[in-house]
Length: 80
Image 1 (cartoon, rainbow, N blue to C red):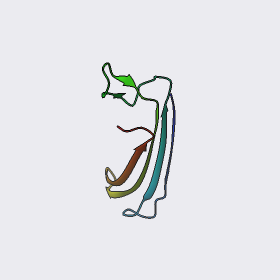
Image 2 (tube, rainbow, N blue to C red):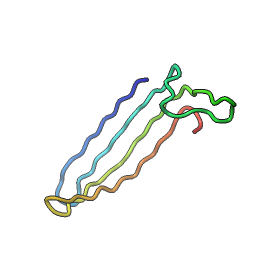
Image 3 (cartoon, one colour):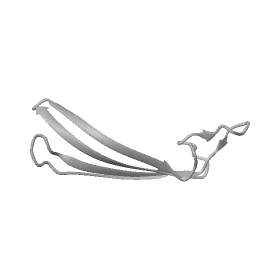
Image 4 (cartoon, one colour):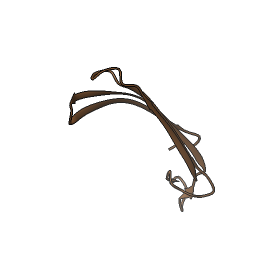
């Protein structure tokens, strides 16, 4: 099982703080961290690579509060 991610943001002002996040998670050799294929009895592990990308913006309400708006897309080499 191998995974990694990268996150980058840039603070323009209190209302515009765009960012992007990307992650990859490779579940191979029966690590079974992404679930099992339940079409079979007993369920079998599925070797797959899951990927995710997210576009985010953080709105700073005050010095103690922030709201984060996020659009996220996930996909995998195997059906969920």
